[in-house]
Amino acid sequence: MTHPLPTGLTREQKDAFKNARPPARAQLTDKDKVGEVLGPIREKLNAGWSYEEVRQELARTVGFKGTRRTLYNYVWQLSAVARQATPAAPAPAETAASEEDRAGAGAPPPQPASACVPDPARRHFIQNLGGPVAREARRQRTDDQPQRPSLVEILNKTL
Image 1 (tube, rainbow, N blue to C red):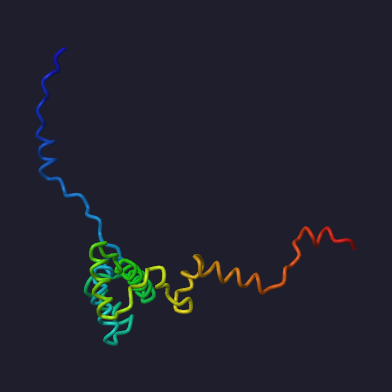
Image 2 (cartoon, one colour):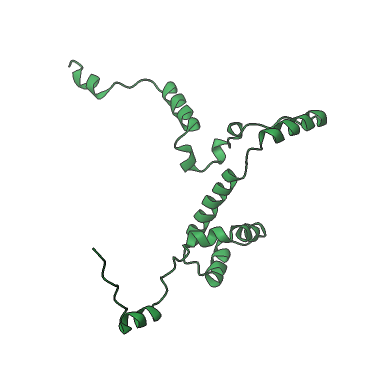
């Protein structure tokens, strides 16, 4: 069985393709815009700019539409992500060589990342909701409080 020859395109189809608009590009979100200029934002904040002044300048230059609080949250979140991504583990060969160098120089050995947990008082309250610090705090709180009777024990108590 042979396939029929393809038919040619009509004039309307050719014109439609020739005049077709490009697909809409995904625009950057406000958080993406803040992420792109996070370094300069930090520099301005360290130089004494307020978040409102930074927000106004971002609105004028890159079209930021968020509030001052939104900008603060984005800077805080993106800075936390940047801090977590910064400490990269060196390769094993580099570790052995650097340990020998440190031993000769009298420098203390590096601490593992798990030992570099920030002080719970300086962490954001969201970070304190889970994890080993929160579990330990809940355990200490329950150890310090007297055991309350359960609802079943209260209901089954004789009058």
